[in-house]
Length: 312
Ligand code: AVJ
Image (cartoon, rainbow, N blue to C red):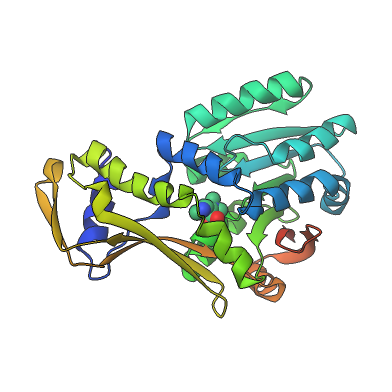
């Protein structure tokens, strides 16, 4: 049994305001549902970032401006589809670099490595599976310049203080002159944002309900899917999308493996995710508090998303 998952579930479901961490969405099933989300027309984030990395690879590489061979270290590389365009540009320009994709999923890393070997045979790739931070510490040793990639608006899942702590941690392992390219979703028409998360087909609902399926499987719980629903809203004043699972009735759920029962009131919520949207000035403040200098923002043509380049 995954001890951390069990502990976090108990802490989250016995709290006064129930919550579960969005990092638990990504079991095998959840990672597949997330692929479906990325293919939804209304989930603009993936397309926007793909456009940035496709059309502005040269501008990004010019701004990174390393004058000797460097490493590109990508956190949460996943299947690496977006990053491909950037890597392809570098390979075609015969720029010398090492690509180090890091992901907690062995499956994702295997798929990525195979695809890249096939499509960019000249690419030097050193994939790593495991916990970000252990790997990061060792990767930044030596005097090769590093470009750290943290794409896909993954930072948006962190509460403000947690985001700052994570970015400070990156800053800590990085060397002076190293760069961070960080993907962040921008504030925009609230309807556009709402539609990206509250899809009519119910794919995002399935993504959330999969957490219940995961608890049933891994903790021998007895959640009944039909007794729960999904709710989310965007607050344009705070830039936060918050997502929830809703208990449709008063009910008791057993976590058999942990010998625990959880009581739900009718309409009680489990908070499952924060997806924060930023303004450019917020991004610049965040860079500064975490010890970085903002070099440049690379936006898509609709100005929905930014890959911002920071320097330590
Ligand atoms: C992968 C964290 C960027 O918050 O937009 C998509 C995950 N959640 N739809 C996001 C997600 C609901 C996604 N991130």
